[in-house]
Image (cartoon, rainbow, N blue to C red; front, side, top):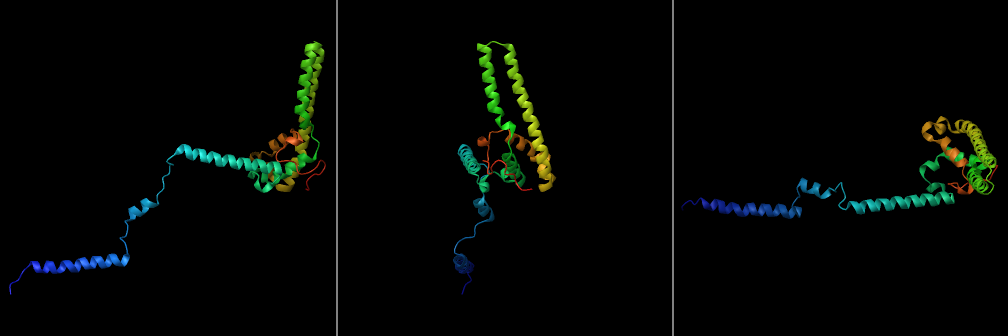
Length: 203
């Protein structure tokens, strides 16, 4: 019997092939590489279509703003912007809406004085009358400033006593919020007033 070196290799080949086939059958499929798995989970940081993405973002923002505006008109506190849901801002609105503010009539009164002064200057052509109208308008403006200042001085003490210094801190803009609401007509205020005149909030 002669020794053939090729017989051993021929005998080992079926064994190796069968081992590979058995291992693949046990797993069911080849295990993917880690880089391939990570690449499959990656998402692009920059959208493919930037214009479409920006348009969709603007549409969502506009929808949210419309919902918040509708909530302020209806008085739905749960859907209002976060700033309008702050407890001290709710107190400010209720306090300003409860009092008669001289400033809330400033826009119609100032507009009426300007129209009347223009008419008188054209038809009457009297400088004294025009000056008197201007003095009347500035006098009314001065009264608005005094009334609003007195209102905020009293309201500020109530806010500090009820909510602490955070309610009147510089970043809270509570003073500006109270002033701007006090010089608006009641029907134009947003959020809509929820109490009647004279119904002040509880301290």
